[in-house]
Each structure stands twice: as C-alpha cells, then as structure tokens.
Image (tube, rainbow, N blue to C red; front, top):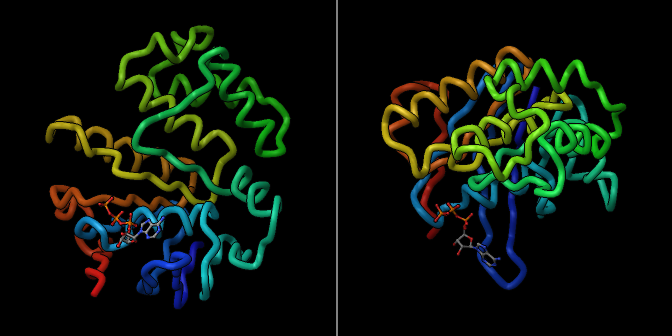
Length: 213
Ligand SMILES: Nc1ncnc2c1ncn2[C@@H]1O[C@H](COP(=O)(O)OP(=O)(O)OP(=O)(O)O)[C@@H](O)[C@H]1O
C-alpha cells in the first residue's frame, strides 16, 4: 500500500509544489496527469526517493521514505521501488542477463537466474538473454526496462511518460502490459504522463495535478 499525505516539494530558490493526497493498493494503479510544468516529474522523483520531500509523507509498505537519510534511501529504492524512465538506460558492456543480475545485487538480493528467465520469457525477450541490450529494437528495450524495474518485486512501480512517442495502438499495448505486469507482481503502479489519451482507460483511477500559480 502506497500513501501520499500533505506532500510538498520546494525547489531551492524555486517554486513550491503541493501535491494532492492519494493512495494506491498493491496490484492497483493510478494515472497522474497534468499540463506541462505542473510538477509531474517532480512528483515522480519524490515518490522514487530521488528528491527529498520538503514536508509531508510518502509511505511505501509501512516505511515513510521522507524520513530515510543518506544511503538508506538508495537501499530502500533498490529493494522496493522500480522506475521505468522515458528513455531506457542499460549497461551496454553487459548482456541482458548481466544487467538484470546487476539490478538484483544492487537491490541487496542474490542473483536468481530463475526469476530473470521468468521475466524475460513473460516479456517475450528471452531470446536476447545473452545479447547486448544495444542490439535490441526500441520495443524490446522498453520491455527490458519493465523487467529491470520489476526484477526485485517492488512494492511501487513508477513509469515516466511511457507512451510519449507512441501511436495509439502501441500506446495501448504498453499500458496494457504495465497494468498486467503490476497486477501479476502485486506492485502498485503509478504512471506519470501528459498523454490525455490514457484518461479513459483509467477512469476513476486518474489524478490530475493543478497548474502552479
Ligand atoms: N531544478 C529545478 N529548479 C527550480 N525549479 C524547477 C526545477 N525543475 C523544475 N522546476 C519547476 O518546477 C515546476 C514543475 O516542474 P516539473 O518538471 O515537475 O513539471 P512537469 O509537469 O513534469 O512538466 P513537463 O510535462 O513539461 O515535463 C515547473 O514550474 C518548473 O519550472
């Protein structure tokens, strides 16, 4: 269960952004929409522990991450939060399997080849297990970034603009995949986007951020 309560982030010498309260249950999802500049990326970074909240709470499975300091935030993220960035980045010198094994170790877990194989098969990229990610198509790379984010069974899966450059058909496919995978893995899913095409599919599970004044 993820709970956001009275969350505020203030950029040093910049704007102060207040976010609405919301919660996401395990295996459920939320679409966070808003116009350019309203704070979507900022919210994603605060939820992912990449920016420290100025005040308020971000509770992820009973831990308020705003209270974690120093390397504790990084350790918590490695174990409990998966992030799918707009542009996937992998270690190019490592194979697909080695990238996933690296992510397991970074999350404080032992390398689990069975888990790696399961996710690659589920995401239909198992044929690339010993290849370099650089030799994969854009769609395959995106599916690998989903595998990387899910490898440690995170409580929270965050996706940043996953449909930004996609046509309607591919946008639907990616969203469908994220929803299925989050539900299968029992992760709470938060998608941050300005893509209002997605609004209908998420119906009441949409949160629209207000414009800053
Ligand atoms: N490093 C920074 N320092 C100061 N202000 C910033 C910084 N980064 C963002 N901002 C401001 O914070 C506000 C929210 O920015 P943010 O990038 O979160 O918006 P966004 O909704 O993700 O926008 P977009 O859809 O255009 O990516 C904006 O007013 C922006 O100018």
